[in-house]
Length: 566
Image (tube, rainbow, N blue to C red; front, side):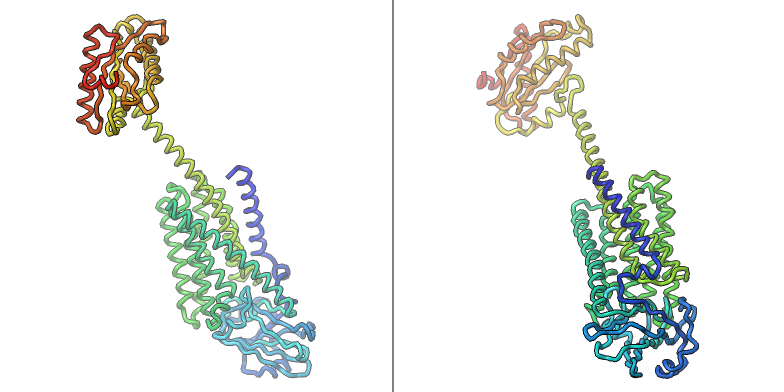
């Protein structure tokens, strides 16, 4: 990734994080701009056994405070003011409310002619009324008399968030537009999750980094969470009780939070997570898991206590992120900046929802759905962080490979001449197929060279001599310095340089200090399939070299099967 591309992605992430935070804390009027119709203010009171007609005739004793949770659990009535929205023959009215934890809900619609129409909804049948965004919808016939007032009877509610929230009334066309809008939002999120899941699973299959698997687990949990929180699960399973859908919602969000913590643990450098941080992540994960399981299995009668425990447990996640980021900053982590951006929106979402749970922020539709938006930002920026880390890992790997090659080269190379050393020659020569030629080349009277020009000058002569040998040998051959002034050449029989021509080249070569340098050569032909072959071939060539020196030097000695190449 280029620097310009990285900057563009960072800017995009910042914009998305800011949008997620603003949507999470937006006031109710603007936050519900994409919902159906006009908001309906509601007042509530406990159910004392009156009939709907009696209450509609004398709606007294109702509390219009927006904080409905102060009334605690139980059975309640919720009533609207007189309505002014009128249906048309071509466009029937729809009324939508938030999906809450309730045992049974019945909506009574009072018409202008005095009739009252009932819409009973049990927990088992509630899923059939859910629309995208987890909103209950009640449809009024277009040919019915105008609806003048609405009354809800809510039974067996733990009143976790309220009795009836987010009531809005509008046309069927507005309802369809809202569904299309939410379908687009959830489709984008699901498509994003699927793309990130497939891509990072493929990366994990190739690279096997643990953080990739933790990330895929987080994205998969978010995918299931999106299906359950959007009410798509109820569309797929219309007979599932709404409270079971909510239980699944809680549990999958817990799993996503735990996976996010373990992703952080495996993503940062090993030095970041000391023993204290590891213990903290394990403890918070256990707490969140216990909260999710509690919401999954706790009976409806005591679900309020489980919900409070869950809220506290879930709030511990952003609290745990703070020391992680602090430690990463202290240790100068290379991944802190991207990881901090990725966590900004989820932390803002968690804080906003915690403030709502304790009554500081009022309920609104986008706050209720802020998890999807915040985690979409987190998933995208975390994927960018993964790409950045893999880039750094690749650079570190390439550097390590380069260092290994350099180390191996130093281990196999004579440091003065740059030719192979004896060990490297043996490792490469032994096992070569076919007939091989071994030439042992020794500089004549090299001791005198050192006496004339000194050891530094002698080193320059050795370097120039080695260059001449390397230039005279074909690419398939091997040239090595195996002693002080002794060199070895191994080539295939068909490629072997003729010893006398090699001597002529060395005699005519320009040497440092205008020295005249000659050499003696011993040559032998044979196989090199094993160590035994090498020893035999070396002894043969060494005898030939001895004969050349004994014959007056500056010549080539031939033994064994040298006649085949002479």
